[in-house]
Amino acid sequence: MSFDSATLTYKGKTIDLPALKATEGTTVLDIRALYKELDVFTYDPGFTSTASCHSNITFIDGEIGRLLYRGYNIADLAKSCDFMEVCYLLLKGELPTDVERKDFVKEINKHSMVHDQMHNFFKGFRRDAHPMAILIGVVGALSAFYHDSLDIKDPEQRDLATYRMIAKLPTLAAMAYRYSMGLPFVYPKNTLSYSANFLHMMFAMPTEDYAMNPVFEKAMDRIFTLHADHEQNASTSTVRLAGSSMANPFACIASGIAALWGPAHGGANEAVLNMLEEIGDKKNIPEFIKRAKDKNDPFRLMGFGHRVYKNYDPRATIIRETAHEVLKEVGGDQDPLLELAMELERIALQDQYFIERKLYPNVDFYSGIIYKAMGIPASMFTVLFAVGRTVGWIAQWREMIEDPSQKIGRPRQLYRGKQERAFKTVANR
Image (cartoon, rainbow, N blue to C red; front, side, top):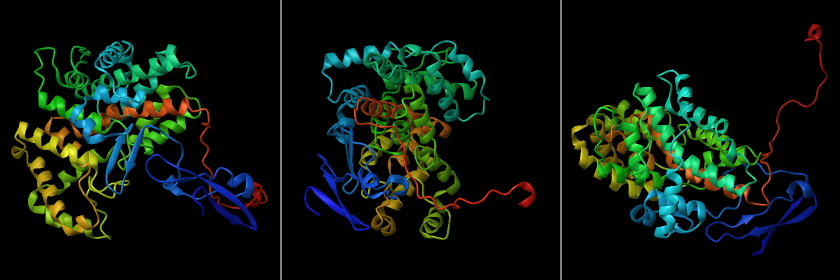
């Protein structure tokens, strides 16, 4: 292999595979000529060794635990920027000036309301429907109301769809929660920050004023920032795949929400709370730690380790501090489940089994704890993940649409079924 290409020989024929260099991370071999030149495909279940696109948005270095948005370290962004600044960065490539930020927030706020007829959609769901099921439906339904932002070839309509989705997702998410609780919907209040407005729509009551807790507002804003994008994960890849067919942007985001719902992806923080409830008491932790180490036991510690990070999840380092701030605010030692979570964290960080395997608490572990402390039910955890991730999905979708080399997604397969055989009539089967 040279520095610029690799050679592959198959059945006596040799071809060069150009090496495409990244600005950060792993060099990629261009295998697009494989089928044309050698009549073969590659086999890569889960696409874990395949670059499906080139992107300028997010970079992850899983070996050392590093996450960059447009070249900026996530720790710097989470500590020094609010979520609206991060949204601007992901969409436009640079952090905004003060004037640019104000104009951007103003543009988002113009679209925070949803069409009044959208309220009727919620009445079609059972009250006990999972909020994610509701969110998938109502986000997809946005395309039935906003026909003036469906032409993906028109840059102005792409911008309009972008602003609408970022603005309306918190409104729809809060509506999904309140519908499940039998509470009246609360309209957006655009004098509040993005995160404060979301909490207001979740918890305000028409009978009294809602007092915003600044610790909760900061925690929610930071969680949105930490979840804003994460490279080509399952839901982002789903959005790109749906978008490659030229589907409208609302349908593409709905597809991303559907992929996010899985417990192996966005549903992991809900699974953390379910696991804590299963453990039940601090005195049971040693037994469950023992079970987690047993390969023959189906029990798994949820919220520990990560598919990409082989070191501490950099988002977890930041959110851990936020979790302890929220727990201090609410008196977390008074909640047995939160107390249990902190004890499990302490034991896992000291246990050699977890240290050697780098099974550190991840962002899902801490976000679930924060939500629980703030009074948000487990069924809403993945919904909040979707609210934060929406801007990343849109940024990735826009990048794909604007890429002249993009093609409709069409993965190949290794077929191992029956070869062609003679058809038999019913009488002869």
